[in-house]
Amino acid sequence: MLLPDRKARRRHLAVAATAGSVLLTISGCGFLSGEGGGGGTPDASDVDCAPFEQWSDVEEGTVDVYSSIRDEEAERMDRSWADFEACTGIDIKHEGSGEFEAQLPIRLEGGNAPDLALIPQPGLLERVVEDGHALPVADGVRANVEEGWGEDWRGYATFDGELYGSPYGANMKSMVWYSPTFFEENGYEVPETWDDMLALSDEIADSGTKPWCVGFESGDATGWPGTDWIENALLRTSGTDAYNDWISHDIPFDDPKVADAFELADGVVRNPDYVNGDFGGVDSIAVTSFQEAGLPLLDGGCGLYMMGSFYSAQFGEDVVVAEDGDVYGFVLPPLEAGAEVPVMGGGEFAVPFADRPEVVAVHEYLSTPEYANSRASEGAWVSANRNMDTSVIEDPAAQFAAEVLLAPDTVFHFDASDSMPSSVGTEAFWSGMVDWVTGTSTDDVLESIESSWP
Image 1 (cartoon, one colour):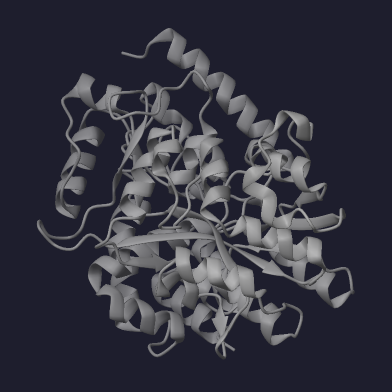
Image 2: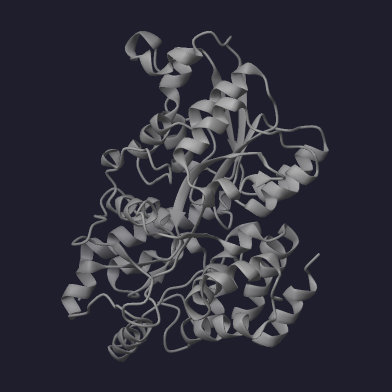
């Protein structure tokens, strides 16, 4: 039975998400974010400036930061560096854009480069390096990155032996959201294998509820949530080596291993018995925004929604995100019990395009565990910096993501579409997923994406 207050809450959130979608688009690896400031900079007399002493001799100035981060996420980010601004006198001006991936290359070619950009795709990062726009990081940043991140993360921003960016946020995109309340009311259990998950889906479907909600719409980035399905599926069907070979094009996009991943995802995403919550049939996936798609979890409109750990920012303050709350998540299960559980995700890299002292100072600060602690304490965010203090994380979903991402035995796989050349990963692959979910055959989609490889 649907509780009236939960119905009303969902209606409120859905209206907010719909209104936000007019102004908001999200990148494939990015997450819900915002443009503009979040409450102003505190007075230095009210701040303990000892942590910022190393930058005390840097002259005041303005540093422009450009990213895909907007709305509430951007307000949290603005608050996270407010003490640094107050103590150093450096003014950080952040601009978030829903068209970041398309606009950054245009700005760079037009001589309108930001001082720093938070780039969510290694493929785009490689492009701006190859085009001669990005600068190698300063020595202090390099030292912080070597201290805070493993070889896997450093490698995504290293080209010809030079480091061109520092990891910023991180997110886990192998996560299935569900409602513990809904599960308890119906006697459902979190699945341990893929077959368990399909059996659970059948049970929910038999009860009269569509088990899955899915949304691929994301403005100019529409289609990226579909790539997450394929990437997670391929890791489970063929493993890490095939995944890396796929990214590097050592196996073609239309390889049988990739086709197997599409077939596994097809059993959920294009199954009319499973989707799409109360949004409609399979075709509705292409026009359902990923921001709005998971909200039916709150009133039993669907039972499961695969989306990154950052999705907790979509729920209102009255929604309890907890293992025994309104919503929570589990890691997308492996094919077999006891098998290694692949973890796929994304994040951003702070990349410099100027080397003025104030820019270097900001970049150095963003690469410290102290900054990671500050940003994480604002909520709905984690870092893969192994020296961050995870006790400052209050959001249970972020705590869960941090636990998985920072576990010593976790092998992190960066989002494949974000790691491929942009003409493939963030163009042909994104649009191909829209074609696929609206009825184009898997073979035709794979052939089309393969033909886009430069």
